[in-house]
Image (cartoon, rainbow, N blue to C red; front, top):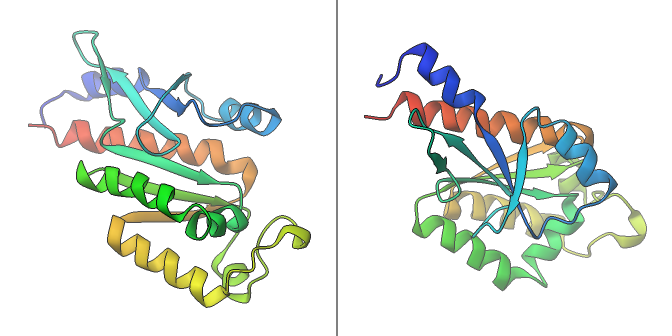
Length: 179
């Protein structure tokens, strides 16, 4: 390992979460960012909704925006729209991440595989996607393989902490394995 435990901790403590400028601010956004446990900054990201930066031992900012990103969906209805109406835009985003070898995490709030497979997903039955549950499953699994996407389901209230933890451990692994 290149860094002492003290140096490693100092850089981890300097982490800031980068939030894409397209993430809409509102009550849910505010609640999510309050649970980060880290400061955040809004910036345009090439892909994903969240990434991070940190200060190296010389005090220079280093960004992981081209190496790791978290894409957040409020429910599987939003994800279904990305696999149908917005498929080309969504796919371009993942292609950009793949071209630079970035790791992508997909967080889908308030869902689980059982709800997706039964077609009973989404926060409102009134606005439920008509995407066949098998097609939804196939898209999710095929894209996970194709673009190395790590999918996580969680409750809306734990999203902020999960985003922060993912980015913290990605940064820690990067720093511990740096040559």
